[in-house]
Length: 348
Image (cartoon, rainbow, N blue to C red; front, side):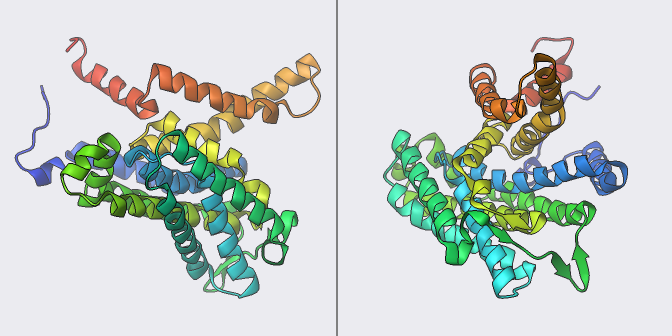
């Protein structure tokens, strides 16, 4: 009976797939992801595409908040910067999407750096207020810079074109989003195992020790802000091309709170936890909670869409429950479940 897997060197310890079985299961999982558009309805595929876009943005926020320990309520603003940049470049300058989306990410990263500089000496509640102020400012810019953003009427963005092929269907976008999600996940996972990632986690755990060790905390905090904003900008650019219609209501502070809910529910400082959190926040309310609430509202004679009335309250309640019951989120719950079955029927 296998009692465990042990490493003989550091290279073995940091391997992603340490056994043949893990490689096999990963191959099966990727194969399943590739056939999803052929076996699901358009409604579920639309929700999964939104999940993919959300994963890209949430990975960025987890780099900043989960790994570096810098709290932010401005992530929705960075998503909006990426979306508007990509949309304006494509709509008014005719720039192809493969340049417009990275440009949105780069401009978001520049704004992240600008926000990072005054936030270097802030922490806790003061840092939250700083990022919240940036979110409010950008909401005002999105809604009132009419010559550029078209105000609250928003922008209508052309469909993606690649070598004559037009991305119109959910299935075609699914593979593009899946490619970017895999790329972003692999980069984030490798980053956290690098010198930069270890510096991020050191800043999160004990910033005084970081100074004593001679690590340039200013440099790594700014890198974290820039990377987080870049991920958000890429997410926003893809979101803009996917919906082909954006307006300031898509990037409010509510969106920032939803991103915070994703990483807290999934598990702070965890790549897989980020994915769990996005799937939970996106799929559970839309596919499970909404039908139940609509049926309940009809039975009780409640007018209006009861789902939107209680959605944010539901997120807030789940965040509080996670922080009290399982601070490590769904990732921690999954790890505890695996550990239980590995040691069962023993208790150690």
